[in-house]
Image (tube, rainbow, N blue to C red; front, side, top):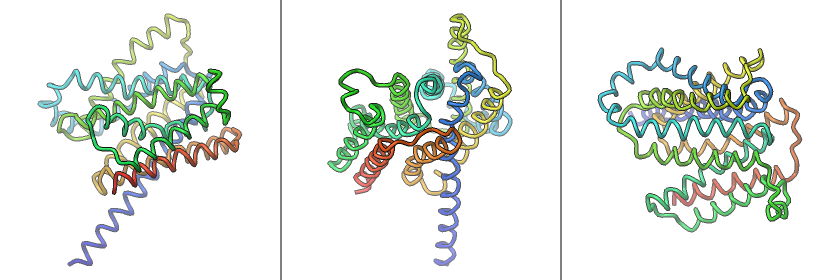
Length: 304
């Protein structure tokens, strides 16, 4: 009996690892899609079409969860609106705008700051205990972020020559960390039910921003390539990755699943070099090592 249980556990673990690898690859690919979208579709139109597509897919495949959870969710509409607006609309808007003035490699590496912002937020807002090892991990990761933001030249930071796209990406990561912290205090409903309503909120919040983009004469209708990008970001990082991540958490728990997010900057960097022919400079390697090492220290500190 014990052997059967062990084999079942191992199968669940292997399945979760496969699902998480695909998930983080999808999220890393989003940095590539963001760069490809430049000049092919305006940022807010991409955000609006992305969440409209996700909402349609979720209503087709996960509607029963929304119906099941609606009696609880209808009492948390303000919360859902804030979470969808901050974590899905604002994050992605800044993400795609940042792609106009920074590289996909930088975007991928800077996403490694999200776990650090989450840890800091947990300490400052929820007063969660932070160990010395976790503090060291935060410091190491921040050095990595500063390295990529300054292009390997720390004098650049003092001279205020930090790339605008990098700053926008850091702001996006800060907002997503707030979204993550907010989700930890969310209503007790199914993940798919909540995500469906969040996608709906993200779509609605994006409409005023799209209107502003049109009025500011920054609107660009999608080209053929732009429509391909819309389809890819809707299907892969927004739909498939989210479903796979939810399934993985059910198999091995959120703690173990969350560690795999560290693969996002790795996948983003590799794909940027091979598919966009971006140059992987020595400071990128140093920064990537520092970010991943800092997150690893934070995870080790948490486990201890």
